[in-house]
Image (spheres, rainbow, N blue to C red):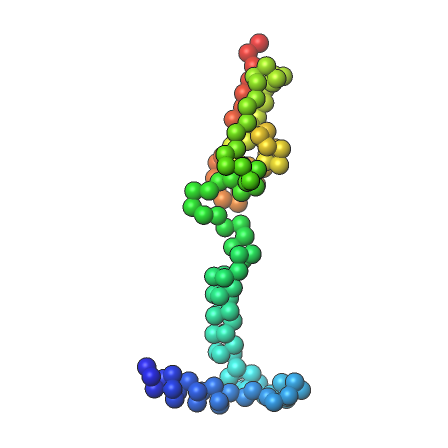
Length: 130
């Protein structure tokens, strides 16, 4: 392993056709460009791995296991709403997917969520008896 790192890798990298000037890139032959593909692929893979590991923006949309609320009143320790049944006209649909922009009422956002994730969540509907 030490020979690979101390001898083989430096010899391989020193043999790559890296031009001294910007215009030198335009003078490389097709074979020279092909020889640059493997180290470029390794560098891109490592860069992408570090990007995913250390950039919070890369994980935007990823949720810790079990978390369902992504945007509704995140500054509160617990989201609680009390709605008087007398205030409901005939019926009301309440969100259970935490995606509604009209929280606590359902706005149909679960439809897109269900398509994207294969889930089957829907609202809870409360009806007043006549």
